[in-house]
Image (tube, rainbow, N blue to C red; front, side, top):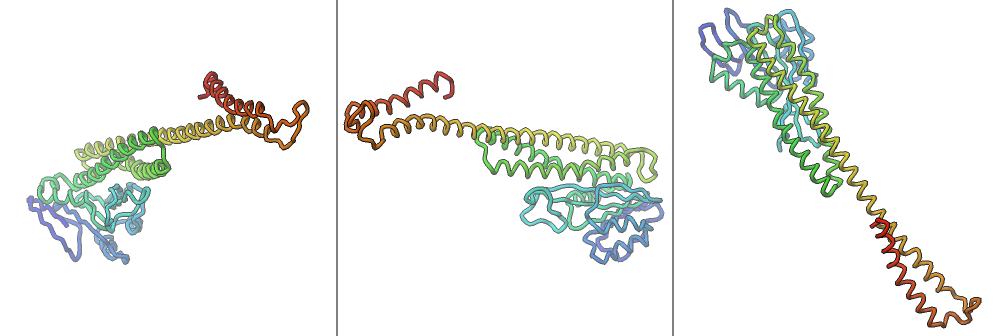
Length: 334
């Protein structure tokens, strides 16, 4: 818990047995991490801060859609962000996307006029960074708890840009590999990236509406000065969603290129096999004709012992492939 008194004194306490709403102009940030299944801490907060029971009920389950709900004296916000998967995922990381390559982080927040209560499970890097900044610079909290929430939301949104940049770079590599030599692993990776982008759009798209509501003027819990900053976060989310849509188009192009390359390669294989079959078909007829076991044919008695016919057969077997090759080249088939 972090308190800023009217005199500008900053007080940081890690363990607080019972948290009460601030009074006498004090600004308070309460961070609740790793609440147990009993929800005792949430229940105490509900009793002390008069949070709405529906908001508390939503706060017990970390599988919410990003949203903003308005109550009489506070706002309830759900914000989500992504981070690359670590070899040892943190407790609050929910596997998402393809092959567990992304982790989803979810933050619940209660925003009042002079207090901010954040609820999450495990460590969130963006939250820890803002906490360190506030402790090092008390003037950030002096600008209001709504400004502190802006700092948190901004850091959560900015964490998605490196992920999208890495996806874009990998898409370019996949396209180059597909055009050079398409492989089955490229097709699998295309669908994995597509699932990641669909999940990111599902999470980040509704957060634009949340930031629009915070950026509008007139809410007593969000100052006019802070609303301008939330507008900047909204612009960042617009850029993220545009980047997601652009990457989805690139994925579609990569998939089309893969299918075209595979189809062309299959056509080349079938063409080669067809030409090979076309060459051996007359050879099979020639060999089959001269391989008959009749000793005499009309007009050719004892033909099986004729050296002339043997040379004719050999000449036909040699001339037929050459003739067909010249014919294929003249028709432009090879």
